[in-house]
Image (cartoon, rainbow, N blue to C red; front, side, top):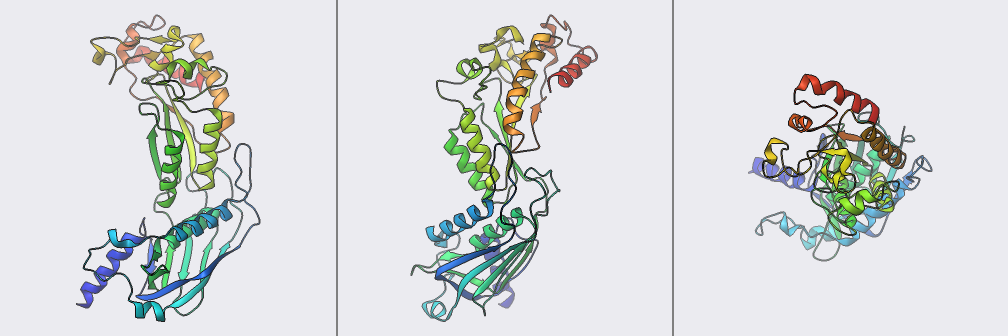
Length: 373
């Protein structure tokens, strides 16, 4: 019976915290948050800021979000069977220790606004006692602080009497991410999503402690990214009027992600997956929308790839990169240029190549990559 109870305890904890912490210990005492529960931050006065994003208040913003989530309330009836007695009894709630404060300590400034995978200490230690009114969260970076706050929030539920509690105290969590790169790829070209949906996805990523957001933002189907120096790309290449991301939209997405410890970066696929360019610049694309035998020229319709060995194409891509990178580079060290599923048969129809032989195409492809990116 004791073994079964312990197993149930672990299952309950795993359902509460995700990803499951590296090391933790817990028990079964109930702790209730004070009505005027406070979070105190002792750390660098401000995180460094640069260029297009401002993270000077990143930790305080995370603290405010924690307060909001706790106040929103979550009664965990969907996580457990109806017959299980998860919620503490009225007697247990009456005897529970009152937690008045969470004290956060951050050891140092973040080494960079845009750290590469593995360059920043993302660990944290969280202690929630059952015999004291103060919980402790310590971390070396704002990333660790934010992950610790997510774990803290996930541990607390709203009782049907309205009080906010955890029934697993005392709790000690010593945690760090298992993987340095924890990313999600969202296809914003084949399937247009309004900016508000993108922001909701970023929120969900932050709850799960992700740190990379890969935006696949252009493809053969549509070009929804507004390039101010080439406005016709989106005007003619998007699915419809307004189904695009303006520079202000992109800036908001980048800052929203950065505030949550996530580097958001773009993928502008090239030289394949580029037929949407043909709607505004048909002279740059070869084998555009071949029908009906499109499978010979593409993995999916519409076919069409940037021409190789073509100075106009190189100048065009340089113009795009020169527009995009200054607006995104301060939010992430990453930019993705695609490069996948290049169809060799397309270049039989490219006057600058006139071949579908890999050895003949490879030098042109290498030159394109070096000159464009």
